[in-house]
Picture 1 (tube, rainbow, N blue to C red):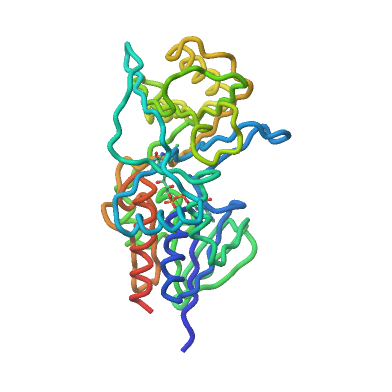
Picture 2: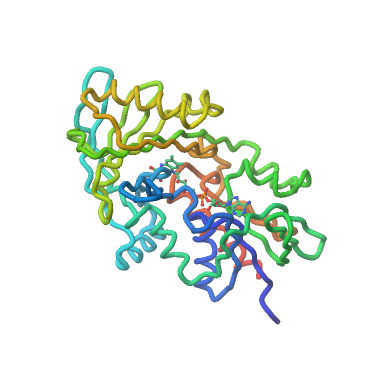
Length: 332
Ligand SMILES: Cc1cc2nc3c(=O)[nH]c(=O)nc-3n(C[C@H](O)[C@H](O)[C@H](O)COP(=O)(O)OP(=O)(O)OC[C@H]3O[C@@H](n4cnc5c(N)ncnc54)[C@H](O)[C@@H]3O)c2cc1C
């Protein structure tokens, strides 16, 4: 008997980990991704587009590794030169001082950008880029997957690997009850990310800085990460969840001026940036998870995975994808 066809929607680390774990069992999948590359929130922007001088990891900055399964994946990517620890000097900007911060765990980054880990996991997979899934529907026998509002494909099993709040839109008012129940408690905080390129060094003694402030939460000197080809100072600053939520409807222009002004107050002597840009992640960090490894509805042959299942971390998203792969493999 031929293998049931399996479609995975979303090529962030959760979707790719799911497809990769199935591929390791000899089970083929087709992954649909709306963007032009894999990685999702493991993202890097190179600016200016005309003459790239700065590279910014404007989503996840780095990740840690706690489980055996994720350790194996990170070590394999490390052997290919796609992942290395970031030997950053950590700092903490309190209300009245800038001081050293201690970190017990190694923090890893992708080379030359954060998406490299996902790219290495995706190497053996069939990923279709530029395929924004606009609707999924089950006719009692199989799934229809509409892409870009027009093309349709079919699959016996479907796995959705998107942030939970984005799932109901795919069902056009017909979200299965069991999926509605799974995602009901999930809540994400947004995050505004400010990117600043400086032609001259900032002179700050730390590369990753926690900030105690109602507007700013974190700043990183991304050019100190291993394997970065752009050597000019590329800083990424994350706004706090509360401030990001309160300013979610501001324009990038408004946000970048406000965040830059506060950064210059927190770090006196900051020169004028050569370049600035701001990006809003509407679903950045999970504040309330579903509290389960993944969603699996055996009757509908519908799965869902992502960081929203167990927590706001790259590793949690990876493990959720692997957990869903195990459910799908069991069902075959
Ligand atoms: C600003 C920021 C800072 C962070 N910092 C850290 C950190 O320091 N450490 C850490 O461990 N984690 C951090 N995270 C969280 C981490 O990035 C996520 O937990 C993880 O990347 C989530 O992976 P995912 O696969 O679940 O989702 P995503 O990465 O969101 O992947 C979803 C994928 O689905 C695609 N997609 C969406 N809709 C469709 C559609 N309709 N059709 C087809 N494809 C679609 C998207 O393009 C994307 O590729 C941070 C995140 C942000 C935004």
